[in-house]
Length: 295
Ligand code: ASP
Image (cartoon, rainbow, N blue to C red):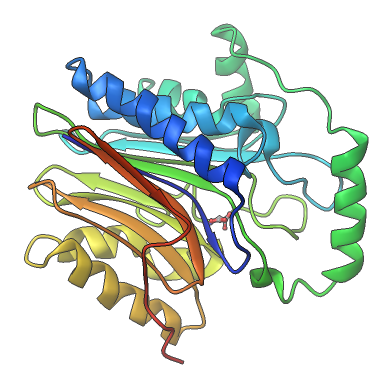
């Protein structure tokens, strides 16, 4: 059994509170695995802890788009039957990862706000208040600085993601985000795109990515790493794909586990707040293995 979580890849050092919350998230998720729970439930639980904290760019702490609206994305996938669910741009819901799970249990894979909100309301999911003054002020400053949508990588992103292997040999991956710091209304990143932001397949592994979504989508990063896991270690598979990503101008971090329970946390960015839980240990760091981008 193994659980790994991340709190975003980026250039700014994650603070202590973020690392503490990641430990909490790992402890809650791993308790589920230890009590014979499934990889899907462990991933959902650890992501919900981070969404509820308000200190990550997900759920209660999600970024605002340029029109002042918080549109959140999330996804979940399980590796046995390749069932997946994702939500794009949901508004007013605290735990988009729960919505993604409900969508996975519906006949569909991906829903945008209109349908997803109906499912969330029907299941009485917690609501999110309107953005407060502080978030609107932060947006005003970001807009001024980032009008051209450049230099956004000079930040610590704080999207969240998790991957797990349960006692039944099932793998799962999930992620939740408020997008990038500066974005036009309606922008969608990799997080809710199955195969880009996350992927899981029991015969190979489970992956969750973080970084500027546009490039991650162009490479279908999570799926590419997953396919390579069939004959490579997590480290090698992740490194090859991150090198390819950097050649098209992308930067990212990934958490990867394989069916044997081996894992790798690798990033081209300076930091990737992340960690893992295995047996009795929980390890969280501001970054694991950095590989330098090849341009
Ligand atoms: N990948 C996310 C997005 O592009 C951002 C992040 O990972 O921080 O929406």
